[in-house]
Length: 138
Figure 1 (cartoon, rainbow, N blue to C red):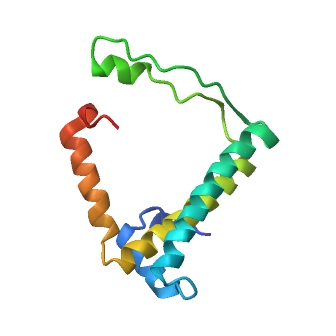
Figure 2: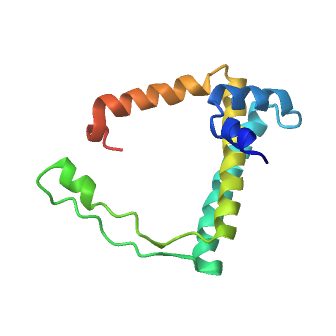
């Protein structure tokens, strides 16, 4: 792939992606198919993460109780752990990117079926995060 193609692809908009999904989706156009495919790909993402731990071993999960006993939300935020140790190997990362991509495909298909603009949803969530900051408590 040439540099120009990579540059264009890196700047792909949600609207372009959603329109492409509308153009190529044939078999799973029913909302029932779409929501079950979303559920399937959620499971596949979870399974790929778990296999990265239990089969490949490129990452480890060391889960412990989170410490909420801090003075401020900023301190709590800065002390929260994601419990992941290590980094995904190229193979596991590629698998997860594929599964997440397929999930995004079906999320876009759901938006299309319900006449929801994915970009608008993303923008609304972004504005909420910017407005509320750490007080959104997600």
